[in-house]
Image (cartoon, rainbow, N blue to C red; front, side, top):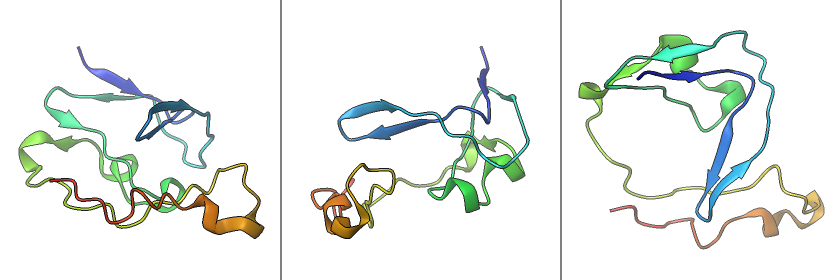
Amino acid sequence: PPEGVDNAVFQRYWQQGQLDQTFWVRDNFGPVTVPPDCYFMMGDNRDNSFDSRFWGPLPGNLVRGRPLVIFWSFDRFSDIPLGRFWQRFHLTRIGKLMI
């Protein structure tokens, strides 16, 4: 069955597993039904990404590659004060090969 995607709730996933957090985004859309063999693509900057919220579901046959490396990993929603911003970096993930 097709999966629905609603703009009100998003799940953030980390290396340790799923972390539940609710975010309200500025875009008015949804719910969206993702057809079979398609993907709903989300950019890494949810509030400023040109992604499936704008151009719709991506057909699976257009996916051509896999990620090679994690270039950047920073938790901007951390409880760690900005004065200690370096502790928000996920240093064990930066530069990690994904192949």
